[in-house]
Length: 248
Image (cartoon, rainbow, N blue to C red; front, side, top):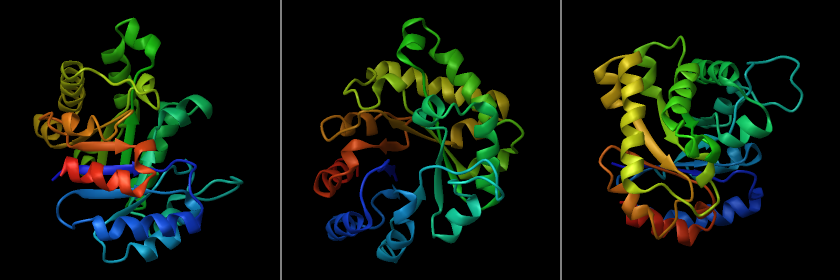
C-alpha cells in the first residue's frame, strides 16, 4: 500500500481545514492508501477531531530540538503528541535553508520525535548547483548519515525518508524516471551500508517535489518508491482526491 503525505506548509486556517476535510472524507477509501495530513500547528487539534475513525493519520510540519524550556515560539514533541499527531516532518529544505538547520539539529529533532513516539518523515535533497556539479550522491549520503547518527536499526521502523530535490520543489521540474530510480538505489545503499541489507530494503522512501495530478501515476509505478510527499497539489481537496485515486 502506497503512503501519501500531504504537507500543507503555512496554509489554511482552522475553518479552511474543516471545509477541506469535509470535502476529502467522502472521497477517501480506507485501506487503499496510507494517508497522512501534515497541517499547521494551529490546526492539529481540530484536525484530530475531524479525522477520528477516518483511517487518515495526522502529522506536524516541524518539531523543536529541545523537549521543553526557554524556546519562545517553538513546539515540543510532547506538545505535538498531545495534540493527536503521529507523524512529524524533519529536515525539510525550507528549514535547512531559511532557518539554517544543520545535520546536528536535525539529528536531535529525530531523536526527540522518536522519544515522543512520533514517526519521522526525514526530508533530504540536493540543490540545483549540487545536481549540476554531480554531487547529488555525496550530498544525500552526508545528509542521511548526519540525520541518522546514533540511531539503532529498530528505530528505522519509525522513520520514512522523503527524497525532495530542492530544485524540484514548487518549480514544476522533476527528475527523469531513470535519474529517480538511481537516486533511490543510492539512498537504500547508504542505509544498507550503515545498518544492514534488511534495513536498506525495508525502509520506506517517498518522492516529493512538484508532484501533481499529471505525473503522480508515473512516480508511483517506480518499484523502489513507497509513496509521495505532496505539497502545493494537496491544498485543493478535489484535486488531491484525484491524485490519491491515481496513486491507489
